[in-house]
Every structure is written in structure tokens, then in C-alpha cells.
Image (cartoon, rainbow, N blue to C red; front, top):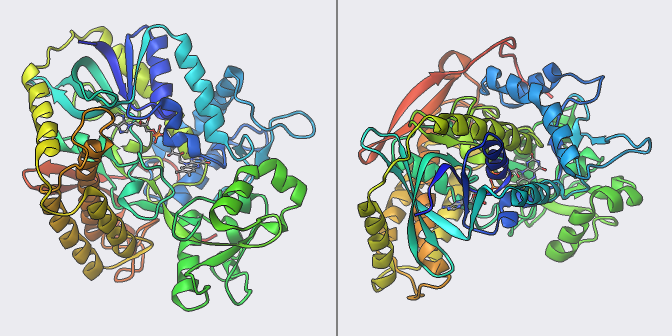
Amino acid sequence: MPQHDVLVIGAGLAGMRAALAAAEEGASVGVISKVHPVRSHSNAAQGGINAALNPEDSWESHAFDTIKGSDYLGDQDAIEIMCREAPQELLHLEHLGVTFHRNEEGKLGTRAFGGASAARTYYVADITGQAILHVLYEQLMKHSEVFRYEEWFTTALLQQDDGAMAGVVGRNIRDGSMELFPAKTVILASGGNGQVYNPTTNALVCTGDGIALAYRIGAPLMDMEMVQYHPTTLAGNGLLITEGARGEGAHLYNAEGERFMEKYAPNKMELASRDVVSRAEQTEINEGRGFPDGTVSLDITKVPRKRIHEALREIINVGRDFAGVDITREPIHIKPGNHYTMGGVKTDFEGRTPIAGLYAAGEVACVSVHGGNRLGANSLLDTLIFGRRAGQDAARYASDTGMPKPSYASLSAEQGAIEAIIRRERTGRRVSEIKAELGATMDKYAAVFREEDGLRTALEIVKRLQQEATTTATDDKGSVFNQDALGALELGYMLDNAELIVMGALERKESRGAQFRTDYPARDDEHWLKHINLSVNGEIPEVSYSDVTITQWQPEARTY
Ligand SMILES: Cc1cc2nc3c(=O)[nH]c(=O)nc-3n(C[C@H](O)[C@H](O)[C@H](O)COP(=O)(O)OP(=O)(O)OC[C@H]3O[C@@H](n4cnc5c(N)ncnc54)[C@H](O)[C@@H]3O)c2cc1C
């Protein structure tokens, strides 16, 4: 039985940063990841990471931009921590070996990003996530006290009799064997839930596992309705064209050749917050000023060609390979598409949940620093700052806690449940068919614009799919790399996530950040300047509220 002081579920940026921090505190650390660590979705991050490092910039300005971007739903004390600690974290990465772009003078260079009042996004061309992830992985390999369980899938979180964490159950994807992992603390760093939607910019692994696992054992979730649609994704496949393109100077046009952002955000234009730009695009498309394929166009030829080749080279490939467009010569058709999970497992600044020994950090968590809408390049920052803090706190907590002894009965129960899925004969649809209907449903009813009837329809469909999911079975009956069986488990997690997103969206009867209710089109601070918490209570999620922390920035009208 592999046992650890700190067991991290996920090896993206949040998980690796947490593991390194815990190891530096002297803890014995395990990291479980269902894919090889450098295939985590963090690898796909293109545009960059924010920090107010420049002497003319200030953490206060970064914090204010983040708060305004969040439509005042972000907790200002958490945002202050993130923005104050950002410069130090960025320099730490640079010292570890991340090759951030340097300008002509040899200094760290920045690019402009949406919703920011200064250019404070640091980057490595348009492969920033990959650059940071690989450096952290190297660091992790240097630490002999960190055990990596690569291609292991976590199926359950285990608790002691008093409710405190006891460890997890994992399945070795390579051979199907299962194992009990006792652990004093568990840090969920399992990423977001983009796959609940179709299309999405998110990798196939982003199925909201940690959110569902935490919810199932009673951890409260917060602001689940806040789902970000990114303004520039390819129609059909959802591939992302980085906000860096607009940061470098690309323009948006409708089919009539009009630079429509003039109407919606006359000051910031294409670099308004993502929710604002996505709504503007969707309005143009809905009112008949889009292209026949339901898109508007992004003109990157406004950026000098040399600069495109230097700073946006990855999206040259994306444009060519996935849309047949040479972005250095012609505009590319784009539309808003699912991108990011602002809500998640509710935590404090140290990543703690109300369940003793259970932590969460990164996209799975809701601290909350993004509130109703995340600013571009603030997520990589969030994963690192709160990953580190969770790792340090978990190591300290573990140092005066005994090793729990989870029962083997939980292992047999999990084994039995998976075997049953593999053994049973399929009477209904395949997992992939149910997933496709779920994705299309969410994209139709719980996207940029929402309203009561549509959300109710979505909830009914999700409930029906939850029933249907219990009858599905796998075509693969083997044990080696049985992704089919894991797909069935992931489907269950995605359906939980979908139900909770829709419940939150129904509950919040106002428009704020990414949630725009056409039946309640105004922001309503009097009634809804509060977080929506959802926790399990038998079959139905129970709704409660918590206050938004305001430190020095009072809510104002939000214009760009
Ligand atoms: C295309 C794209 C571009 C982006 N660009 C930027 C950007 O430029 N700047 C920015 O700030 N943000 C960006 N983001 C957002 C940002 O990349 C993510 O929010 C962030 O990387 C999430 O990191 P994470 O560590 O929380 O999770 P992830 O990197 O998603 O890692 C999750 C980990 O959990 C593991 N896992 C999940 N479930 C299980 C399970 N059941 N058992 C075992 N392991 C499990 C996975 O194997 C993986 O290792 C982008 C996102 C996308 C999709």
C-alpha cells in the first residue's frame, strides 16, 4: 500500500506546484495523474501569465482589473493575495528555467491581454503552459521523495469515521489493477470540466472528476454557474486561438466588415473582458450579421508578419491544420466557445475545504479569484499561487497527523462497481453518444445567453441522461488500457457537473459576468452580490449562499 503525507490528484500546473511545495516542507508526496503529467491540459495554455512586475505597474492595479473582470463576484482578499504574490512567483519560474520572452533590451517582455489596464502578461511565444509545465516536471523528477503514479485514475475519495480524509482508491490504467492509497491529506488538482460542453477548447481529460468526487463526499461547490466562453474558438472543433492574437493587435469584424466592438466596448475594443467580447460576438451572430457558418472573423493580418511568426507561431499551425487558413494572410472565422470553469470546490486561501485534510487548487477549485469572469492569463497564476499555498499547508497539517487506515472494503466496492460496468451487456446507447447529447445540450442552453425555460429543459435532459448512464456498458471487456470503462466513470462525473452548473444558473436570477440571463438582463447587487454554494443532500443539491469579500473596491457599473 503506497502511503503519503500529501497525495496530489493531478499533475498539471496546480498539482506539480503543490507537490513541489509540499516536498520542500519535508512531506512524503505522491502525485496521481490519469495521463502522463506533461499531457495535462495546462500544456495547452498559449497566451501567458499575469504579474505586475514592471515598476510602473502595481499589484493594486492588477487586483482592480481582476475584480472588475470578475464583475465584483471575486473575493477581494483572495485576489489581493494572488496579485501581491504574482511577481515573486514569476521570478521563481524564471529562475527554475522557464524561458520567458525577452524584449530588445534583454528584459522580460510583456503583451497586452483582455481586461487589463497595463501590459502585464509574460509569455513564451504562444506555448506558455507547455514551457512552464515541462520545467516543473523536471523539478519534480529531481525530488526523490515525490512518487509519481502516472496513468493512474482516481475513482474515490475516502474518509475516516470522523469525516477527515483517509486517502483515495486508484486504478492503474495500464493493467486495470486497483490500489488503496492511504494519505493524511489529499490535494485535488484535477482541473476543470470543459468536456461537459461540446465544442470546448479543453482537452478530453477535462471531465470535472475532482469537482464531482469532492461534491459526492459533501464538500461544498461554489459559483458553478460561472462558465467562461472564450471569444475566439474555431467553429465545430472548439480549438483555441489565443487572446494573445488580439493582445498583439488583431481585430474582430462581422460579415458586413464592421469592427463591431466599437459598439460594445468603445475604449477597450477587442481587449474588453472575455464575457463582454463573447456576448458582443454572439449578438452579432444572432442578429444576422455573422457569416453563414455562425461565426465572425478575427483578422490577425493587422499584426506584422514577422511578429506573428515570433509570438503566435503555434496558432499559425492551428489555423492551417484545423481551418485551412493562413492567418498571416487572411482573416479566420471564430466564435465564442466553452473554455474555463470559474466555479468549483470551495476553498480558503490555503486550499482547505471544510473536510479536514481535503484541499483543492487550480481550475478544480474556487478560492474565489475569478468570480463571474476570469481575466485571460490569470489562471496559470491561480494554479501556481494557490497550488503552492495548498502544498505548504497540507504538508504542515500532515506533520502532526497520524496515518489513516482506510478500509479494504472501499477498495473492493470500487473494484466491484467498475467490474460491473465492464461485465454488463449494453442495452442502451454508448457512453460517447450520451456524452455528445450532453455537450450539445449544455452548448445550447447553458452558454453565453441563458433563460429559465432553456435551463429547465437542460436540467430535464441531464436527469434523463443520468438514468441512461446507468444502463450503458463498455465494448472493451479487457483490463489493459480500458479507456472505455474509465469513460463511463468520467461520464458520471460530467453529468454531476452539468446538473450543478444548470442548478446554479437557474438559481442566480441576474446577469453577472459569464452568466447572462435574458430574462434578468441586469446585474442585481442588492439581491445577488453573493456566492451560490451547492452541497449534496440526498438526491438533490442543497443551495446556500455566502458573502463576497469586499476589501477596498466597491462595486461599480462595468464598462470597457
Ligand atoms: C487551450 C487553452 C489555453 C489556455 N491558455 C491559458 C493562458 O494562456 N493563460 C492562462 O492563465 N490560462 C490559460 N488556460 C487555462 C489554464 O491553462 C488552466 O486553467 C490551467 O492550466 C489548469 O491547470 P490545473 O493544474 O488546474 O489542471 P490541468 O492542467 O487540467 O491538470 C489536471 C490534472 O488532473 C489529472 N486528473 C484529472 N482527473 C483525474 C482522475 N480522476 N484521476 C487522476 N488524475 C486526474 C489529469 O491527469 C491532469 O494531470 C488555457 C486553457 C486552455 C484549455
